[in-house]
Length: 215
Image (cartoon, rainbow, N blue to C red; front, side):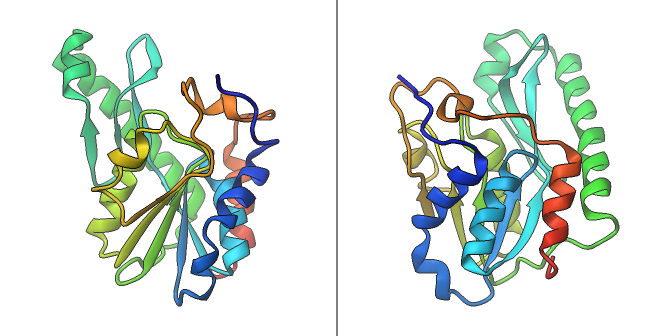
């Protein structure tokens, strides 16, 4: 059974940082936190590695009426869909389009709030460590890896505190390295690995990003 393995996201970030010690001497390293829950975790990693930090704005495409179930995920550049789930749940094209449009609007809103007119950090020819507070379906991280590859990252590392055991094999072809200190079995939900797993709001994301002067 899942049990509360981490006190909070900061503790989880330090656990991930411990697994990334080899990157302390990596030049021009970039740590990217997936908004919103991955940003506090990424802050611990970026600070510990003395790395630049950026934010990845990605959104889950939730099943209408059961939004916790991911049909896929979307970013400003890419989208992944679980087509078999879309079919099995009888999601119409119109309903799916409505979900996509809603999430595109939220993507645009968050990009404006988090960046405040600042450009995205340069990714080309850099090692990029993508960090979230955990993986369930992995859809949002999948999209983030596609974005990093498309932007020219020389190496993509996926680093999360908790995930199902199968995530390692699922990301073997998407990332150059997969780092995850805790893989409970059976895996129930990301939040089950935390004692404190409150929602991260826009204000917290902005405050964390503001601490990284090189962002």
